[in-house]
Amino acid sequence: MSERMLPTATVEPRPDASMTLLREVMERPLDPGYDDAARRRAAGGGSPVRPARRLAGQLLVLLLAAAIGLGGVWAARSLRNPLPELNARQVLIEQIRERTEIGDALAEGNAALREEIQDLQEQAFGDTAAAAVAEARQLGVWAGTSAVVGPGVVITMQDSDRAQRGEPGTEEERVTDFDLQVVVNALWASGAEAIAINGIRLTGATAIRSAGDAVLVDLRPLVTPYRIEAIGDPDGMRTRFAQTSAAGHLSFLSSRWQIGSEMVVDRDLSLPAGSSPRLTVLQPSEDG
Image (cartoon, rainbow, N blue to C red; front, side, top):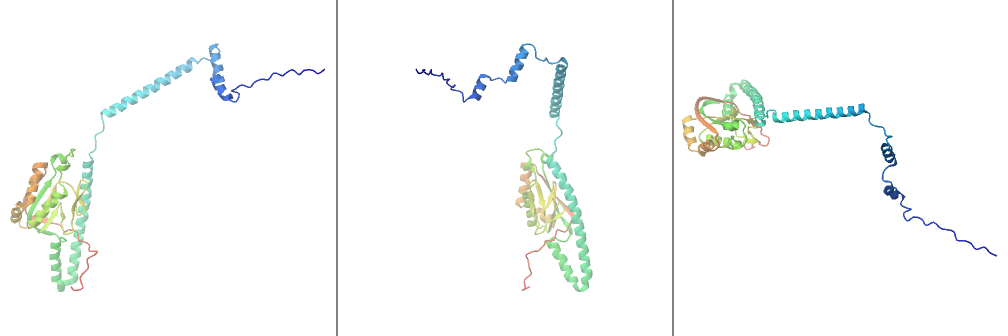
């Protein structure tokens, strides 16, 4: 007689058996260590914070708050009393004046060396080349490479008072390179034989232009006031200059932008020699 086999009970696996990590997160969100500490604290077994440590922490917080408060007060006072602002234009003008003085000293040295060279040439040539030396000196006068003296007129131009103080919005109240070009061209047309601006002799190769706020004459920066000296017949130049457009231009600058100008007669002007041009392309013709 065969025994009947009883069926064995089978245990069905959980549907989320493969998601152990997710079950841990959902069923026990609190870390066991934190959970154990919370139970001890609730049962009165936690270690209370010592009074001395608590007092030290409060003192530290108080000191930090006081330091932050003092720093804020110091910053506020600094903002209320700022340091005086430096005028960039005034600093630039001072630098230009210093560089101009250095350039003038070098120019005087060059003029002295040029005179010494001419004297040595005359001594070397002797009487046989006296006519050639005299002609070279005359050509140097017309070319602007020799110092000259004589009567003439002086026109002084300067920026407005507000522009000289460096006030904002006074860019149009300053003398520009164009203003100087207008006056110089009118003086040439009025019969000037030699012209210099602030001691810089004008030659056929001299440029009057600007670089930013600075006016350059022969690549040397100038600042107000601008003294334009012209040698020639004073009376004739004054009469002819008054008939040019430059006279109206100066009047417009004065009435519209408060740029001052003045013309006076000087019977004893002395203009320095200008810089000698360097010929790098020009060659003498074989035909003479």
